[in-house]
Image (tube, rainbow, N blue to C red; front, side, top):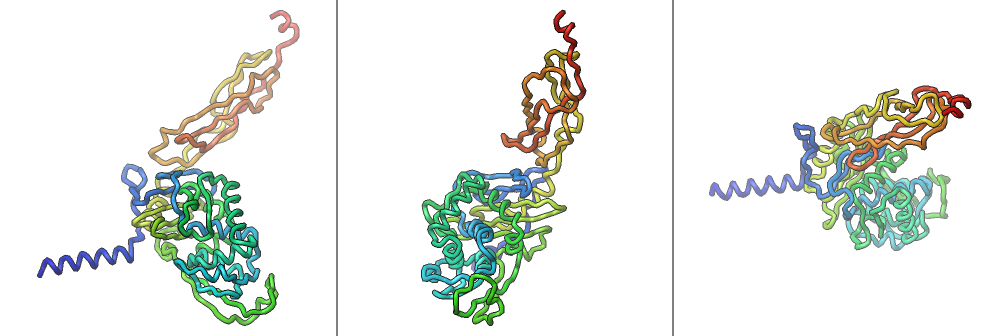
Length: 390
């Protein structure tokens, strides 16, 4: 009897953890290493610089699930007008797999509301309506998505639909999703939508097809309150400001989370994790606490030297034009490499401050900073008589 009660308690506890997983952060390890995360692929990126602070299988192709909607939304925001009125087609209304807002053929909604439904509530039917409105057809919009991915340098990404349904030719990577999200977060409208916890969307009455806000005062025929699926927005994690959840049986539980502290914004991509909330916040906390600015070169620091042809001095000293810093994980400071690229040997006179090279700094093979190398002094040209004598 006691054993049966014990088994029941374990089962109840397991169900509770499945339905209500912890959102607390996985703490960085004591020696400054990143936390051990459960995701099969992940990336931590600085939004402003694009520098990657952490990656796990970052370039391995994965299914993105509803994280796809980030590309759908940013394209629509850039190409459309938020007060456009979208008329729902039969194709959009037929979408019923996964999450939807119950669109029906002929429904009319503002593009802004469809975007909120896609980003906040992850509505699959809304993305098809958005695509047809912006691209003229779903297929043409998907082409626009792939064109945008190439333009952003998402070299391991290909889209086959607008919402993330499984398709053998629909894939991306953790690193590519970080690139996309960092780009999208620079758009104020997108950034506002993904941090909104609750919004009311409106169905407009049927009538003539108005493409602008001319009928904004029309009495709605239906309204619905949407709640953001990103539970981190209501957590106590400092600085959280978005972005998007995604879940399918094949993709697993996915999440892209962003946070800002002291003007520095980071984005964490988590793919196929048993606890996406803890993985995301753990990486973000690691980025803020363990990745700090490191001085790579002080202003006027001597870096190299270069021969001078026909100069009073045979060499010129090259110094850093300015102080140069980069954010580097504490455990990787000694892994930073410097490569110096010098200009062709100059002929005197050489002006003080003239650029004669570049020092570039790399971490794990990726550039993190660079600084111009300049002449530390003026070097006169040798007189014609001395040149002749020599």
